[in-house]
Image: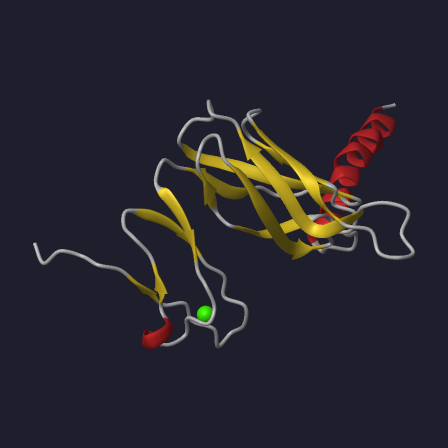
Length: 170
Ligand SMILES: [Ca+2]
């Protein structure tokens, strides 16, 4: 009888370990959110947000850590053979309600392979600026006015983003 009880206990311990090991080696796809762009917006603003990551199949919505932030997939005009507006993969229209607090929030993607890891999204009262390519050289640096929240993307390993702004000497 004691032997039977011991066997049951071992089975209960080993099974969760096997499940965790499978997930750790990534044998099953899982929605993984690597980036959002832009990284910030103002309360009361509506922006277009693009996402990047792995296993983002059928991601049709985003969820935020504050209920005042909502997202709908961006729709494109139908082509000649489409029956209606078509979803634009990885692009969302995000509304930030006026009562969303300034600060750091989280966003997750929901897709075919579940809910993703979170990425940070900032709600700020600063003006929000974005890089403008080409901006890899001093002569073409994106002009911004400070103070600002600036979002940029490094598209390739060789990409650099340069910005220019006016600052006082003191
Ligand atoms: Ca650049």
